[in-house]
Image (cartoon, rainbow, N blue to C red):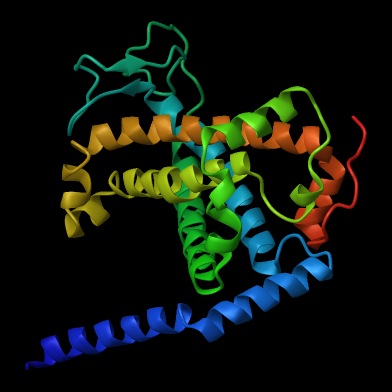
Length: 275
């Protein structure tokens, strides 16, 4: 066995040992005791969840603002590897561009903020990547995903989702259990965002980087080209903005001050606020 094979084998053995430790009865019992202790103390969100939540919020706002500025420089979207002013676009955002050579149909040119916006977009993207990595490791090694994010057995059906949506639409007070854990609709939405949308938006963002695609060319080939990655990145951003709007609305319906206090201090809400 050569040095490379030995290193690979040792890494595999280490990973297997970690997984075995995570699934051992003692580890599972420790997780259950920790969760019970948090519940008895009235804790709603652990410190790591709160810190990564607010770091993600800061990074997302920065990415959204700078992303809009980047789009202004060329509000035309294409499919494939290349996209130029002379090509027929897949679709156009009907706004003036910040570059007079980009045909938009408008006779005005927006201020060019492309320089600082690209720099800040890049920095905020790495903040999001490292925050997501920290949250992912925390969720796996502490059992947070299994305990709080993956829907429970009775929540894995359309009836449970319909029940929660009906309660929200009728502005009925939330169940007492929702002060301690997520309901079926929340868990389903978080699964889609955490395990589908966020990984895809990070992937499509990296696929637009020439340095990254130079090292990992299949990252952009699988998406159909750099312009395809840009277009998918735009639609994924729209999905996250829609999620954010629904998320904030649900918080407002459940009691904005108490839910915000829980995400800042970690303490569970004890009662529902008035409208």
